[in-house]
Length: 601
Image (cartoon, rainbow, N blue to C red; front, side, top):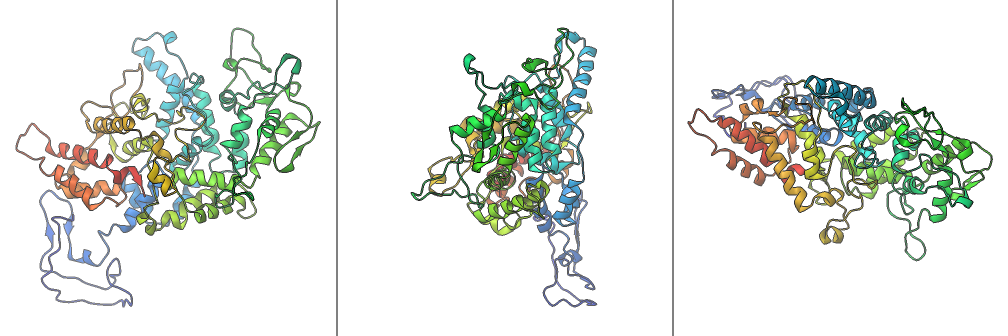
């Protein structure tokens, strides 16, 4: 209560020490100290009291709380104040370790279950069951939101989304009808988020949804007389986007240069052709029930394939002979097709680029767009070898989140530090950090209005290159400073204005639902602002509360004053108008659209 609940001390009659401090008094150093004052203030309609003892006992000091809010903004999709307070009591490493122990329900199974539940609702509302298709991408979205509101597996889900923007597939493609497949692919990301990157890489390689997306499902061996050659799509992207990138890297993420000062390519077209030979012969292991007597085999239409079971090798369709991979690796002739694939995955997994390449992309997703070379090098070193293990994701995640560059407050003031928060993360924050007036008991969400406005929802990127490029440079000022701003690629004038309109809708609780479905006639789920109305009695108190939740204590004095000045005039005697509600709406709109919120420092 900064504005009104102040302490006024006229005298300090006595101090009684049973504990001696040689460094400082206050901020919790208060054992054995009694403080008396001429008055202790309390106000009508407020639960809090300004007590004299609070001047030295540390109560009301928010440094640790704000530090925790910032940490959780990096490691989760957002938490409420009670959760922030609970995490603040222990070292962050303890929280990370506890999160490592939490498993998640299957997203694939949940997608299927939600489809069946939605079908029952659709029919109960008078719909014809033959008119309700699925499970589709809609039902995957329902499952994703159901899994990410009120859940405990916060870190695992955050890492899974980060990985989904590196190892990309998308329902914004011809795969949109396969909801269970998307859920199962997300399970591969989520279940391996705390495992080993090698297992994750092999898992996505064999997943039928990746096979359908990057066309190595039913990828045949060469038949020159019929002008048939292995598809090169996945072979190219597993190198360029999933593991090693286009150019040789040093451990700190900088480019290796040749004698002429030029970058050194990691692979060429011949390498792509050799890897394409590797990824041949994969097809469905099981098929969906059908009336056409279709059974598993190679060259079965993707439509019939079960999308939640790894692809299997059909040796007769696998390219025979030796294959020449990177760094002189030769895959010998005569071994099984699956052994060829494992050798190729190992070749990329063990490439010196993979550590810095993946480390940089995860740092950019979670912490900042322009990490220092030293930060990248420290994380890469952990990826390369942590207690004798390469690719230990737990160690990598901990190294990213606990690094000095992620945790030290000094980096907040560095103008080159920080990142633009992606629009969908802002959406997740609002639904997780504020109360929902959920009458139907379901957290299903389609989010199509938001997707049309910003182009973002989980697994909804327009291409395998994700929503934005990690190397994107927004303008000449960034270029001159040698900085990147990946998320700025989708921060267009149209999308930024559309985001403002979305926030305006969120805070207009009488007319807008935060969660939406299609063809199910479920009751709306708007925000519930009742708890915040208590703080809205004082504009500055409300803004301080929102600062703890959304701007991590980094709300500038200028922005704070603008918001307070907008809130304070909202008062009056009209009993038909809920002025506290209007104050909360105004405060939320201004803080969720402020640069202090959309830039994570």
